Image (cartoon, rainbow, N blue to C red; front, side, top):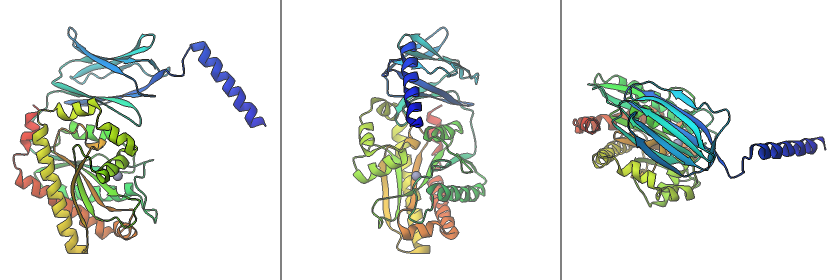
Amino acid sequence: MRGSGKLFLIALLMSLVCASTSLAAEDVEVTDIRYWSYPDYTRIVINLSDSAEFTKNRLSNPDRLYFDIKNTRIRHELKTNLPIGNGMLKSVRAAQFAENTVRVVLDLQAVRDYKIVSLEDPIRIIVDVYGHAAPSFKKRVVIDAGHGGHDPGAIGPHKLFEKDVVLDIALRLKKILDSQPNLEVFLTRDNDVFIPLEERTAIANSKNADLFVSIHANASPRRDAKGIETYLLNWSNDEEALKVAARENQISLKQMKKMKRGKDVLDIMLGDLSRELKRDESLKLANYIQLSMVGSMNRDYRHIVDLGVKQALFYVLLGAQMPSALVEVSFISNPAEEKLLSAENYRDSLARSIAGGIAKYMSASPDARTVADLRK
Ligand SMILES: [Zn+2]
């Protein structure tokens, strides 16, 4: 009884608070604004409590880009002035511009280009701002171990976590690639920590990477599903590919299908001048990795199923400015493959075979650098 009395009191207080601030139930809140700043690239993420329409505009003297987000309010405790000062952006500011409009302003300094995309779950607007890059002579590879922290990824029937398996493979892969003098290798995470999908792409862009490879373990409700597959970012109608992308994006299959029609997603994918070349290079990269994995894993383990190279919209690859691929190393949901994935030897073989694919790509595409050069 005491519990329900308390509940009633809370409900009453909430209705009083709502009445006093005239915060209508349908008002969407701007809940958070974050940014990741690097020498020639900045990613800004505006989180919303629900979907909202927005318009964008760019003004000069002083140069600034602003977004008017309709039917929204700023959450009370939100910090509304973020000084950045990285040579590209001076600051990001947010204000209740009109009673039901929040205006977010980016004060620009030296900007080459910018891209905007909105994503769901959580609902957020992502703004990528590009500055002017300094040249690098080594080839840079960014390796992304999927999931981490509170996000375990897929979980095997014997409770093996995808996040642990892929981190171990990524660490091994870095060690192998580090032995190549012409490579510089970065990891998006090197321990059990959660990193939002959009931050992973931000890290690859900020490092001005030549390649981005995201490592995952597959899962299916069909326990006998098994094998290796490699993805690149592109449109897809394939139901199985859509399911894999929905799981990795942590959204429903229905949302996944809807995403395809989103104009902003289209914009970030088609608005890129080097897209065609990047897609061709990503396809090459994915093919080399897949071939190398299936070839060498079959030599060591036999009966490894080749599921081929596929395409789908993965959040983690969206907005990546370099050739990129996502590897599904095996099915953690399959008891036999889960057992293999729990063994050090198998993980080591996987890391070696991915490294082999990357090396093959690098030697076959010595001009891969031109993709990055196109952006300058
Ligand atoms: Zn995953």
